Image (cartoon, rainbow, N blue to C red; front, side, top):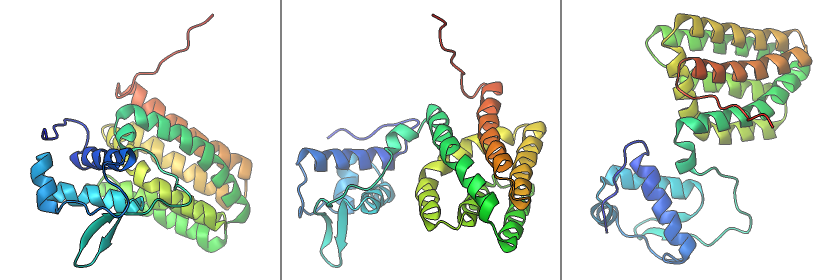
Length: 243
């Protein structure tokens, strides 16, 4: 078997995709025991750490299960397939645009509902979250974890636990996209200032209980983030041809 070689894709994602393909094709069937970490590392030309990360991805999708003292086995197929995005598709700059489109649809309405339902304590928590982002960035961090926490709090402020679960699910895919956008914004002071202002506008609209404004500012924040990537040359904006 040829070793995995990649430049932009993570090795663990590639290995996970290969294992999923083997399960889908029937090469690995429910109840089959996966090779040991060492065996897979040698077979695929990767480290055992990469193997562990790949197997963890399969476990998170309920495709394999661990049995203490016995190893890792292919799981029985679930009655209902879980919602999931393909990591191989998401690991690209273009995927940032796709994720931003998904976020626009969801987060505009989530912000509007938060404006209708947020408690004073939740508004105060949102303001603390903004300070946490600034503190992280001032300390040399990228602020990704703090930014994700900020958006998670907006979801919690809706009072709908399903939004909290949905945002929690999306975080695993938003993280890499957010690293690209925040990394781009960190290169320019005006970009960082704009992001801070956009975040504050969302929070203040929620605090004033203005759902229309909150929706507008949440959507505008994501649109502006994409435009900042275009201005920096990170992505190329395509235009539709006129008939």
